[in-house]
Amino acid sequence: QYMSPEAISNEVLSGAGHLVDLYALGIVAFEMLTGDVPFNSDEILEVWEKHLTAEVPDVRRLRPDIPASLASLVMSLVIKDPTERPQSIETVAWQLKQIRDNLTRMTAAATVPAATPPVRAARPAAAEVKPGLSVLIVDDSRELQRVLSFYVKKVAPDADIRVVDDGDTAIEAVRQREPDLMLLDLQMPRMNGIEVVMYLRGFGLAEATIIASVSAGAQEHDVQLLQQLGITRFLTKGSGMQPHIEALVREAKTTHNR
Image (cartoon, rainbow, N blue to C red; front, side, top):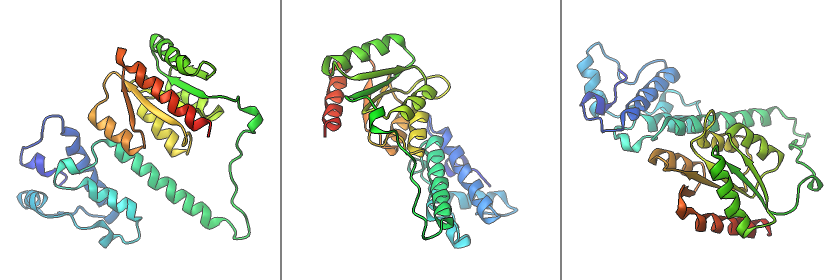
């Protein structure tokens, strides 16, 4: 009752096994929301045939009270063509977090008396922030930290460069001062670069920061997820990255000086 069409027909493409799991996740979500699976029968062949040929019923017809964004996510997971589903569990997790956060904000807004102005989080006083361009380098390789710092200094010798080697420390650094430019390694222990970006987006941090992904070779599904998170700058580690780093620093300087 939870098998994807390509699994039933034994046509799972190489490297696409996780998309089978995402289809099953969509069926489970449908069941949790409606109380039943979309295709229910005592005859397993009949169930398989429906998974192959029949469209999954729109979950909102059965649960019109759920958010449209949640319904859309569930329905995207059970698309017949695996290439049209979300391409990673990280993408699904990010969308679920966004849905949850939106519901939390809506609930909080509904409980605030009309006469009470919205309370905004206090930001550090301007005097507490060092002037000049701020660059945050996040990489667990000390050698690459030195190389990236050198490239930045060539274009912005007076830049405030902070260097950290893990995601947790990077988030703390952003909370202390949001950088103009972040050079972010994707492959790090404990919290990787994608998780760092998801955290920042989820908490509304570094929204004006230029974030560039720096990796030895990002996987296609990682690139797709980062693009959905608003990251459009991807650099490959190696001798050819210097002009790209320098161009990013110039862009950040222009943005900073506005």
